[in-house]
Each structure stands twice: as C-alpha cells, then as structure tokens.
Image (cartoon, rainbow, N blue to C red; front, side, top):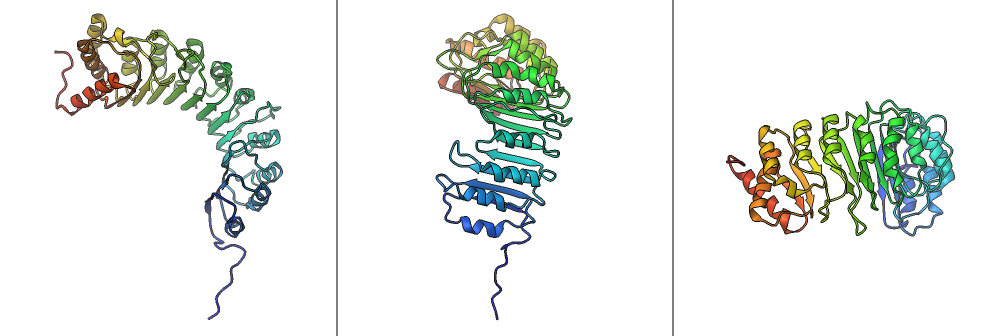
Length: 380
C-alpha cells in the first residue's frame, strides 16, 4: 500500500490555530497548518527570533475567512512587520471581528484598525505619537482594550467613537501624565455612549490622584455594572481623594454596579474622608454589588452615631468581597469587634476581606466565623 503524500496543508479543514513556541526551529512547519479555512489565528513570536521570519509568517496567513486575529511579540517593544500586517488587514477588512496585537504599531496600521467596518473587539498597544484621525472611528466596536504610555491621542479617538454598541473599555496606562484619568470621563461623554457602556477598567502603573472632578463624569453612565479606577498609592502619598458626598451620589446614579473599585489597594494613610455613610449608600442603592474596593476611615465607623444610624435599615446587598488592604484599624479590641459587627450588618452576605497585615486579617477571620454561624445578631 502506498503512503499518501502530504498536500500543501496538513489539516485543510482546520478552523482555529494557536501557535506559540520558544524558538523558530519549528517555523517551517507552521505554513503546513495555515489552511485557507482558518477563521481564528493566534500566533506568538518567540524572543530573539530572526525578524526575517515575521513578515514571511504574516504574509502566509489566509485572509479569506479570517475572523479573529491575535499576534503577540514575546519580547517587549518588538515591532510587528508593518507592510505585511497592513496588507493582511486590508484583505480581511470585511471579515475581521476581533484583533489583538501585542507589539509596537505604526500610524498607518492604527488608521486601518480604526476603520475596520465590522470589528467588534480590539486589544492593542498604542503608538507613542498622535495620529490624524479618520472620519469614522470604531464603527462597530463593542470592546476596546488599550495599553499606552505618554500618548494622549487615544483620548481624542474615544471622542469619535461611532459605534452604537460600544460597551466595554479597558485602559492600562504606563506613563506618568496625571491628565489621563481627568480627561477620560469627558472624552467618553463626548462619545455619547452613556446608554451603552457597561464596563470600564482604568489601571495606572503610576500614582494618579482620584479626585471628585475625575470621578464625577462617570455618574452619567447609569448602565455601568463594572467600574474600576485603579491608581496605586506610593511614598508620594495616597491616590484616593474622594469623600462621602461623591460616593453617595455615585451609588444612587449607578444602581446596577456589581463591581466597584476606586483607587488602589487601601494604604496605611489615615487621611480618607470616606465614612460609614458611603458604605450604607452603596449597600442600599447597589444591591447587586459583589466586589468593593475603596479607602475609608475605620474610626468613623465605630462612632456611636454611625453605629445607631446603620441599624435603621435592613440591608440586602449581595456583596461578598471587600478589599481593605492595610488601611488603619482602631487600636481598641472592642472597637474592632464593633467594626466587624457593623460591616457584617451593612453587608450581610460578606464572605471575604482582602487585607494586608494582621489587623484586617483578624477581622476577615471573624467574618468567616460569623458566616459559619446559623444566625448572626450583630447588635444585641
């Protein structure tokens, strides 16, 4: 019996491929799997590879049915071959629905991405220079993830979103410009997506103060279920500069929230103006809230007035996870116990406290013990 020879493609009906390796030794084999029927392609370029292989590889990617494209450079800052990538985007412009590019991009590639007519999901690292925006930006986009440095042109791009279905934005900022968070809300308001946006994540590697002015624009996005504005506290100071007034206003305006993170992991600073008032407002108005991270002054919670006021409402909030970090606790053990009871009363379904150090860790253990009890009576 004669052994059949391999055709141009080992698996001619292959629809999806995920190809990542540590070297280019197997590069010649990849072309055997790049079938014209592929619709989902995920290729990772290894570290220190001969860059001559990258253009050849991308030029072989079939564009006829290409729907999902992910190209990743394992080495930080490595470029993608621009001419071949531009040709691929041009050939697959009508079929592409999802694009994920991890590598430095040119302005011409960005211009092409911004205008893909049927693109739903876009995940990329942005170039360092501002480009001249085309007439139509993101006509069909639903989800955008951007990683950027000092560049601010992407804020202007957000203002020109033309998609009526845009619902999720994730921003990862490596630069140090404090204007990014301040300008993010107004840019989204200019895009008129208040009725569609349901998820917003902003993550900064550097300290950017979270102020009332920076948070206020998001009050208009009443359909948000996820809002996370993460900026770390550093030796320069605490990043959290909010108060009860703005958080209570936010709680009323965003009743659909299930995840709320404001500022970085609570630090050791005892300067927060947030008190039990904010926790009560969130519990009453955001009953589906499942995760909460914010700085608050624990000493304000143990005051007798706050203790008595928190008993006037029967709380039903579904919150299970509360991030406390290393923010200060009262030194008196009786006060700590009262604090534990109060938090359990406001958030009756609480299961986990994420903490750093022994203080809040002990409160978390107490919550766990009470959770196992058949009946909790916080206030005898």
